Structures are given as C-alpha cells and as structure tokens.
Length: 240
Image 1: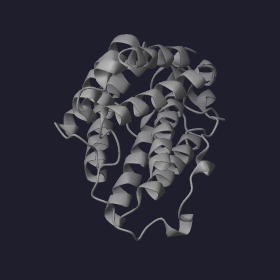
Image 2: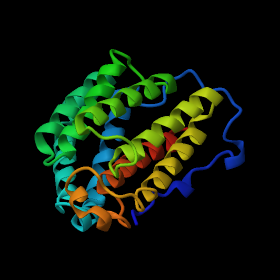
Image 3: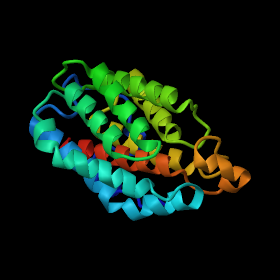
Image 4: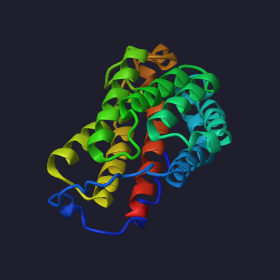
C-alpha cells in the first residue's frame, strides 16, 4: 500500500460542504518563482521518499526500476530548479518534460515527459494557473499520455489515476469548489483510483507479460502519479 500523505492535516469545511461556493478567480498555484520552487521540490521530495516503494511495486509486475528511474528524473529537475522556476508555468513545464524524457528510463520518461510538455503547451504564456486552465492543461496532458502509450483507462497504467483526477477537476469546475475542498477531493480521488488498479489485468508494458498474475498488484505508474498529485494537492491545501 502506498503511504498516504498527511491529508488529515488539512483544515476547513467538512466533506459534506465541498460544493456550493464559487471557485475564486485568482490562480491556484505557480504564480511566482517561490511557488514554482515549492511545487517542484514537493514533487521531487515525494518521489525520493518513496523510491523504494515504487521499485518494490514495479519488481512485482515489471522491471523493478520505476523507483530509481523516477528518482533520477526528479533529482535532475531539482538540480535545474533555479533556472526552471524563472520561466512562466507553461515554459517551465515544457522544459521539465524534456528533462524527464532525457533522464527517466523505460516507458515512464516519455510518458511523464509527454504529460508535462502537453500541459505546458496548453498553459501558453499564462503567469498563474486557475481551475479552468489547469483542467484544460491536464486534459491535454492525459491525451498526450494516451497517444504516447497507445493506452486507455482500465489497462493498469498511470492513466488510471490521471483520468479520474481530470474528471474530478472537471466536476469541481462545473459545480464550484473552494481550493481547500478541491485539493482534498482530488487527492482522495487519486488514492481511490490507485487502489482500483489492484484488480485490473495489465495489458501494457512488461506487466502485460504476466497476464492474470498481474491481478492483485498496484500499478507502479499509477502509484507515482498518485504520489505526485497528492503532493501538489497538499501544497494547495496548506496555502489556502
């Protein structure tokens, strides 16, 4: 089981009060270099802290290198942070995507690289990210991952977390939600979506070679996606 981030530290409205207030018009995050650095460090740190866990998950149904590959890529992002954070969010994400492609091995580098580059392209020259733009960015990123991996939800990949997260953002966009509630809702969605990969049979990547034996294991790509989503949600929850 992937260790849950301390979402209980969030304070604010109860779960039953998650909708009803209009979404504020100000940006959610990445508004200035300091926010961009916090987001980048949060992602790099959660990957570093869970390298062994991701590797163990991948050892069960894959090559056993997902943790070390992801750790190498996010270490490279952290080393390039001072340059990356000077750019607007879109440019930063596109540059970060190229770094992941160059440093993360296996399929994860191209997939996560495609995700960030597509999200960055969708962000354009925006200086901050509000919910409508973030939803559009993630939609573009999810589409890019699907094209790159020739995968769809239900095939035991990182899409099985990213697509529910995108849908949760769309739902929040439609109903209105405060940033705290949005962060909690999205983090909870990512956690549940990861657990939902356990009964799936893998049809992509090395895990597909196991056939029925892949059933009963969490997907390591979905696990890393959940960790990254939860780390960013925690930042949003802490700042509001």
